[in-house]
Image (cartoon, rainbow, N blue to C red):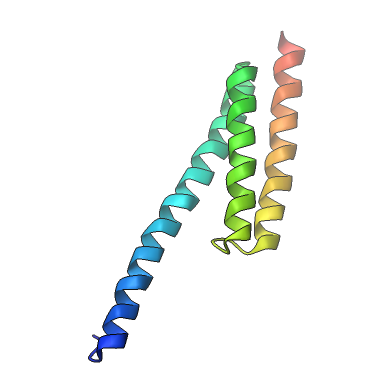
Length: 94
């Protein structure tokens, strides 16, 4: 455990940031999964909304260094490919 005041403060700050970053990563995962799942089900409007939100959250996470910028870009790329494939499959079924 930290003994100096500055180390104690640093511990409090890092714990706050860790929790905020965990929430941000969880939101990204949730919207990414939601976009692909809804596109596969044929709910294209909801899927589009979830996809746009996920991309925006990934951009912001890369900018704020919650994720490394290259990691954010890679995840966006993979999400886009999965989303497009799910949309095409849903349109083919309809």
